[in-house]
Picture 1 (cartoon, protein in one colour):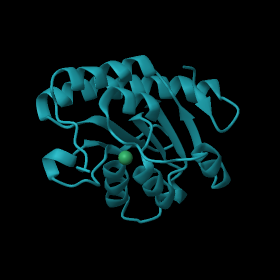
Picture 2: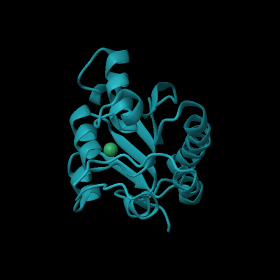
Picture 3: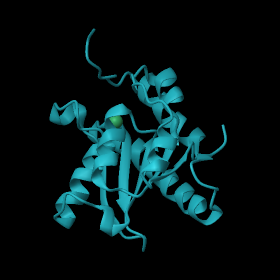
Length: 177
Ligand SMILES: [Zn+2]
């Protein structure tokens, strides 16, 4: 699938995002093996390219269903910058896969200005069996709130990480129904 966005695609922004997301996918593959984290990694950068936070999904290790990579990255950025409102800092969130229903809420409330993600929710669900939730027109909803979104960036690398996670028998954590 090709890259999607809720603004006309800016090739410069996209190229930067490709590099960051590929680096995150590589680091994620390593972290899954060495630290046993969930199969997602997120990072927050400022407009100068300084990294503010970088966190993996820690649902299993920290026994908390809210600890998705994006939520951890936002919490860490707010801690670093000592604020509940990230908007004045003009920050971008990069994440290896499309945010789930909970993380969309968390991002919206944080003041993050741009979101760049890798694998689409549809593919995350197909590969892993995680339930990403119902998210009608979220790119449009984010646009209304002044949040730029670019998605499906370097998807093939991201899908491989998720496929390996499942193939090697790692836990697919979800509530029992
Ligand atoms: Zn999430």
